[in-house]
Length: 435
Image 1: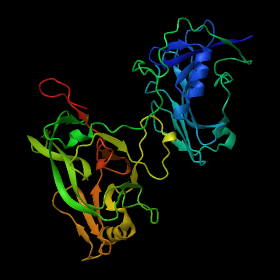
Image 2 (image 1 turned 180 degrees about the horizontal axis):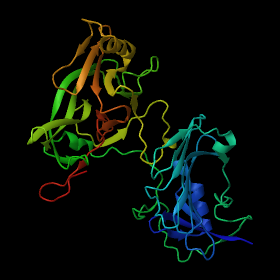
Image 3 (image 1 turned 30 degrees about the vertical axis):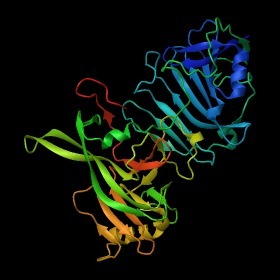
């Protein structure tokens, strides 16, 4: 008979590979019913490393299942999401590490791995990364049936082992309760777990965006060791008479409409650029050169400083499906984004295409901006009075849109980061810069 001990805790510390604040099964059942986070640890007597750890937070629609090998390395990570159907869980995201030997460290860069990304509408992607020499990635669409995408939600205490065969268990195990020991649990949601403890996945965070528009702040992008923020550069005004701002790629598919919309009071708003100055050694000049680069573009709704920033979501974005640090935003295949009046979107984009792509000469309602700015084109709709301002990004892909709100919750700014969020450096006197 194979015996597996089942223990419960308020949290799991993946660095220590140990539970934090063990609790009884009864306490875990209460947390489960209340939707509060907790962890379940499955161990085989005599084995130091756990077999598996289950991480539960129903309030976040999340269950994680981590499997470990005898060396204590994570070999499988399954992300399950509870969506609209209360009895079914979507196998949202899976990562499997295929260690080539017992000496290979956990998550080694050379370790081959397989990732499966699934969505409730049937879309999915499997990525196999051989790593090592040859490297590369092989991406396919996994032909999975409905029963492979979804699983029934087990009742509390009735979860099976995820990878029983991989653990060498050839017969169904007998589960017994582990001794929780002395309980140190405080209030059910006291939030004082160490920072190393697992927490439910969160989408990408904005970083200190306000700092990018404050002259004198020192930042680094990892490539340039030090850059200094200079005065934001005003580019133009943008009219939004409809009261609905569009932030999108102007190369969006026809008829799809803008990817992101943000309600703002009808009016005309400043569009400006966040800029940094830095020096570098220019080889062909054989001299130190100082230059200015753009880090972000902003539509400034109000002079009131943003008290908080949030990532804007499109109509199809479901936060319950976001994995750790995932972004939502607009897509571009032409390295271009834009701010525009959503009420005149089709007309404004049509003018943009006629001016830029078709190159119609002397087109009324379209102009190239050739003043050294990051921005490239502007169009305006005579009928509505709405504008579109297109700006260059650093490449194709997805760009998140950050909405700044005042302490009262009003929209004060909308920002697109052109090259990601730089890191704010410590102030000259040694004090940490305010994040």
